[in-house]
Each structure stands twice: as C-alpha cells, then as structure tokens.
Image (cartoon, rainbow, N blue to C red):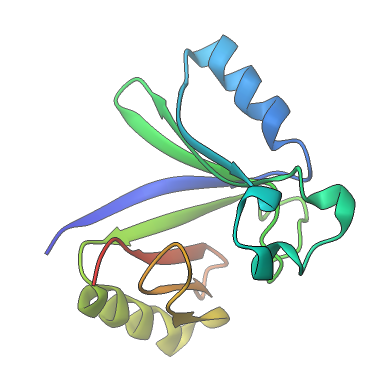
Length: 140
C-alpha cells in the first residue's frame, strides 16, 4: 500500500494567474496542466463557454513538494474557506475504497467514489471537522 497526501487548491477562475504567480514567486514547475475544454467532450459539455478555458487540473512541483490546482469542481462551488483540500492518492482502488468508506462514516459525501476519465476511483468527502478530502486511485 502506498499513500500520498497532496494540497489541492481551488481557484475561482484565476488558476492560470495563480500558476504563473507560483512559478515566479516560488519557482514552481508545471508538471501537468489541462483546461476544461481540453478534457473529454462529455465533461466539457457540462460547462458554460467562458469556463472552457478554466484549469480543470494542474500539478505543480515546488521544491520537493507537489501541489494540485484547479478552477472548478462543479460539486463543490467556490467559496472562501474551501479553497484548499487534501488529495489522498492511493496506489490501488481497493485502498481508495477503504479510505473513502472510513471517511464517509462520519463525513459528508460530496461526490461518490466512482471511475472517472482521470482515475479508476475518485470521490470527495468532507470530514466531521470541515476538511475536504479528495480520494484518488492511481491505478486499478
């Protein structure tokens, strides 16, 4: 079993500006970046035209740390205070399911754990203390 916890920052349409800022201020290296419009057509169809250029997902490396950043998660509308979540990356789907089930016992499900175009198992839960956890399986 292998777990990795990664800070995940949600922006309100300003992720590209934030990424550039982190590049300049912190020497961040962009490992991956994809806009909503660059994703699968069926996913992009859920968004308005002006949102297609928003960052769907980006991975930055800052020193020895990796962070993730995006503009929108439709199930989690932006509000001050929910900009930062923790993405728990499990190496196996079975481990992602175990973690998800434990967190949901006392937490509030934001999205059910299910296969997506970017992960074989992905879901979100807000724990009893208000912390949002994104559960992500790296492989099946």
